[in-house]
Length: 76
Image 1 (tube, one colour):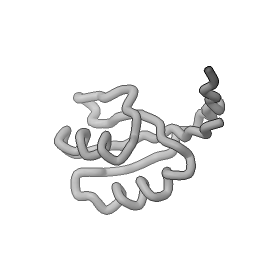
Image 2 (cartoon, helix red, strand yellow):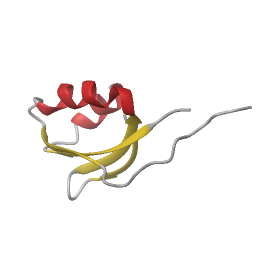
Image 3 (tube, helix red, strand yellow):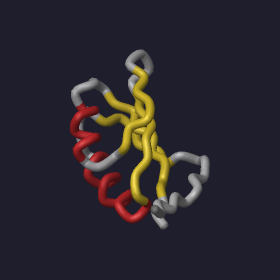
Image 4 (cartoon, one colour):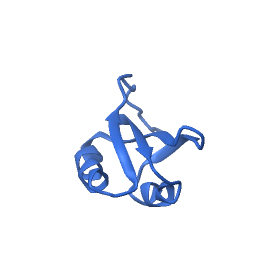
């Protein structure tokens, strides 16, 4: 069972989006006009990604999603 955590990242420039995807965030929505993106990441990697992004000059603010995500179980 994989626990996921939603994340919202407000950015200054769209260049950072590719860097965010490289960190393992699965991006679900990008707003060009309001300059933010929403996505989700494994709960155990959240702190590592948060610390990596919080000091980046193109990132304004990072928030954890207030909506609880259901645990996803991938079985065949």
